[in-house]
Image (cartoon, rainbow, N blue to C red; front, side):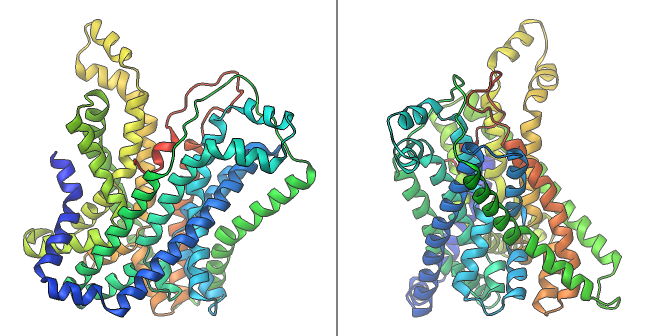
Length: 508
């Protein structure tokens, strides 16, 4: 209960902080014309990105799972890479290449490129679990490809589409860096700006942003669900001729070029334009790298340690209280990082004096923000762990410590490692929380890149961005492949995979 209280405390603090400002001031901030414009921008962008990621993610997943493509698994790894690319780096690259692009279009493009893998992964898993014989029967009855997809395939994957789209929508309302680069103003960018001048106004603007996140979750939860069981009876018939395969590969290449190759190419270009005097010192780059590793690693360990008891109690002792505590922690998925940071600053300034402008506050912010990411991994692994294994070991006279070390840990170890990687990669590329909570003398890869690009020192910013990509892309691709280790319908040796991807659709 203490863990859950710490996780949801920022939301309570924001409400208290806004209330302390008085209703008159809150009303003045919320009902001004500027706030209406920011809310409109945020909703409009979120809807556009939601449509974009749903279409791109579903199309790529269908091509990977239903077309007879060579190197399909390699394409999966490549198509996951944009998810590991920091949004603010992609935004910087596109803005440097095309500075006159309309801000709404630029923001939609950037967030769609980074968000479509959130739909690709669960939809791919849903397609593999779906009974392929239904599609074969539909085609045998004379239905065309579009009719088969609409009447048979889509009902089986719409839950996965909704979950992935929800994740992308929540990422949009919490993004700051990419939108600031392309000069597109949302509630989050305004909160960050107001935070420097009027923290109470920032707290007041946090209210509609939190409500917007809850509204998206409520809309997703109200959509009709259809779950399909795993089948391994027949092999999925691959469709599409050479033309379809060429079109699919062409689309894959275009997506990867726009989301990965182009940003990296822009960074390499600015690195080549640099002179010796404009490049950052190796010592500074090394310090920023190790600081990033330290914060991210500490966050990964903290999330796994704190989420383990919550997940274990919810699975092994599923009382109403334990399940409620488990589900309440997912509230933070609807709370943008900027709001968590504002609340932690309020707490540290007014009550927790020793934590203000310390690395511990950064780790606390990361842990609260990314707690659900680790929890879904731990929960899935504990759920898949058969109770009989531990019972057999205890019946042989083994103690709890032995059972945990020799039975439980080896079985859930891969899931714990995946959870750590997921939290580590997300924390390493986090910008907003780091900018607001990091000590003045603390330098991370994200903050150093942001500082140099804000001064238009692109050559000095490029090395930091390239290191961020190196830190995030490799484990991100490995993590995506690990989540992609799902049995395909029709595999003779099909067994349940380590993590059920729909759990990553944000616990509803």
